[in-house]
Amino acid sequence: MTNRHPSEELILRFFEYAHLPEPLKSVAAQCAVLANNMSDFIESDPELTAGLRKLLEAKDCFVRAMVVQENRRKGEVEGKPLPRPNEVV
Image (cartoon, rainbow, N blue to C red):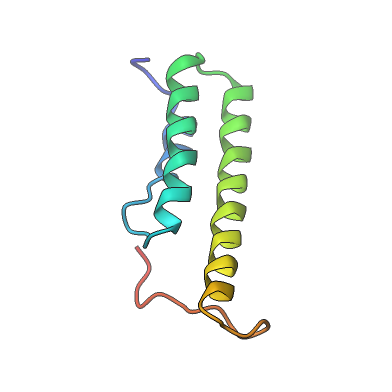
């Protein structure tokens, strides 16, 4: 697809994942691939934008689930605050 609606472009920016550590990067990358494929395959439409927004919400849930899983794997105690990155990218 050559032209994306500005709202699609805005949402697609939030699927960037290069700044994430593994394995969060792997989870986010799979969602980014799907988001870009749908944006390329389906013509601009309000429903496409809504679908991308919901996929973004799902991606955020998947990444949070992976953070919890990794904390459990490392033996972190449930209920402790999640580690924060040194900077926000």
